[in-house]
Image: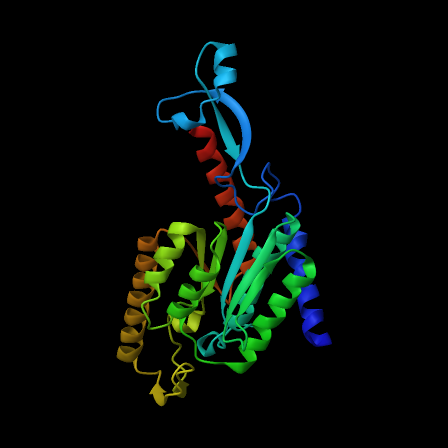
Length: 297
């Protein structure tokens, strides 16, 4: 890890953790609350509760059925699947998409480390993509450095293969954050659906404004970063811009539909937005939603 990369990661850590303090306080050690194996508080039984959770000792003392909820497991294993392919090396704002993806990985990685849990990764585009789950801030640093180094390679990746390999590597139930622009033409939703059946999965879609609409700036040279194709495009053509925006909207809708069909949480962030704040707010809101759902059961 070069001193420049280390300095950028430290600056990113300060930004992320500075916003986290006081925002994500709760009773669960894990990044997200969920089913676990540790006994929690007993409460009166309500129709729909799992009868296997009836606490017979409390039931006998109270003379009415009580169940004992479970709290989140003490150790949550988080896996970051980060896309650092050629299509992520684009940005019309102050940053490129891979830098936003790196920031998203930092949010989940530092929050996991803050809880004392383990974090691993699969960095698409890296020479050695699979990184084992380990605790510690130093390991989060190494994951973020791997993202930056992979982005410098701008390699073509296979999202479907990456998700399938992640599914095979991560046997223990945990939390998975898939961070990508989902521009891959493979059938990535198939392994993602299988991954979501075994883990709590959040899909973070990274985009740029110029991928959705073009400005009339005349003739420009376009490059497909995944295939290497090049073409001259006249952006002053209003009809071309209209078709471009219609196709971009259709693609975005298709990605949203695929993600919804996989049963994963979908978060959209853009190069021109406050992505760190958006991610922290989304995680905070999801924690509250899951906690409230757990209390209502």
